[in-house]
Image (cartoon, rainbow, N blue to C red):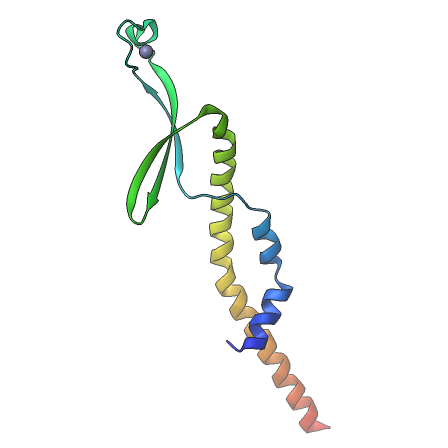
Length: 119
Ligand SMILES: [Zn+2]
């Protein structure tokens, strides 16, 4: 892609604005589990209720990492996961948009040349 076309695309792009509104973003999954605790005589564990906890699973350099998530961080991470999904689909749309911008600029230049040669 020619440099001036790329800068035109970046300057005009609605993508930049949309991406800015999607931070923080993350890729991973959040799951609620029930786990037993280490206390010897825990009423909840003896009842079989156990203790609710949140786990974030994310792949880093091909390795899966699982981390406990403090309850108060859950809404933030849920929002970040949603943002991550939107960001991903936005990134998938950028390639076709660049090609479309290239084609329409090329066609405009072609039309301008034709117009110039006719007059
Ligand atoms: Zn317990």
